[in-house]
Image (tube, rainbow, N blue to C red; front, side, top):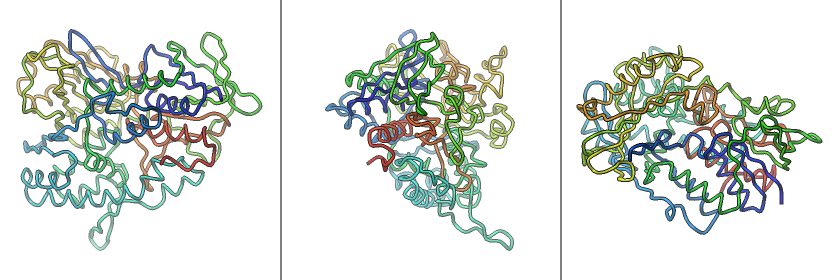
Length: 501
């Protein structure tokens, strides 16, 4: 039995902790805040409840596998999982709208044809077929296997089979999402639809590789799911599974150093000077590991950690509303911006968009409202991290909130008149809760020449591993669960571990 110290109680860290405990190891999780879940948080006030992190779940099979491998009770016995239908309603800048059925390519094609006309549904359906090919080519090496020393093969050939496009005397193939939109989808609304998936993950659609087509594919292929009571209930279930497997949690414990003895990680040192010995250390946020361990945790030839604040964050507005929820309302509505170029300034110049794309979540969940005469609603927009934009300046957050509400009123008329109160959460809140520099949110790993990978789970320091959204295979609830499975496999089975099954 090995002693294992885990830094942080985020979703990936807890997924690793539960698996390692089941393998017979003594696992202690050190969390600097007073709760678990990382960015998966809940705001509760006056009988209202709000998800302030992810509001929906894709690829629930990742967490089903976690619960199958760590106990007798399956995931569905512990949380209520519901497929939302439609998966989302989309409001485009020209006033057209489309509600896309959940996990039905044929239904999505029909809905887009009816809403947009001109063969739009067929073009989107053909795009999803190509996106599936990219998914099939990258799923195993990018998501289910450790990042091997020859990781460059993932950034070689573009896995998305783009359609040849003749331009002047040249034939080209789309290399970015923006080019897929312009050359293959050929409709500004379909282009906005595609870009919206990238923005939701904090990815710049203008520069994202064509392989980012897997992001909408995951939703269409595997469905979009809601956890009754909010996504925080999923975090609670994982935490309680850890406790049931005798994982120990120490809250309010900030790690300031990872001691190294005989060339390998030997434990953790806390801010109060306490040193806890360990045979293995599972860290989070590889960018921070460089300041905690002697030497460079990632050597030459490895994927080096990128500064976290080069990525954007999220603005979340929680609205407590008077009046009953419209029974026909979609769970999620995406209100697309009319200023697509201005919106991309958040990536180019670190300035928030004047007309943001806003995701409006209206869960039909009695657990999140005091009674049926009220409604809880969450607005989310992708924004620059706090190190690139001063979210703490007087009036800045409120001014952007007003712009988000203005956008949301396209989906929910007279929204302002219904607001009892609101809570605004900027990247500064994300930074406080997760420790990520500037409150940035990690994007998923993407393959291809223009892709971006995250540092490997096994570091250059023996006994030290990295887990969570800032390490392989990147950000997002499913990816965090995959990261936990990979770290557990590398520790339990050793360097010969070939990946999750």
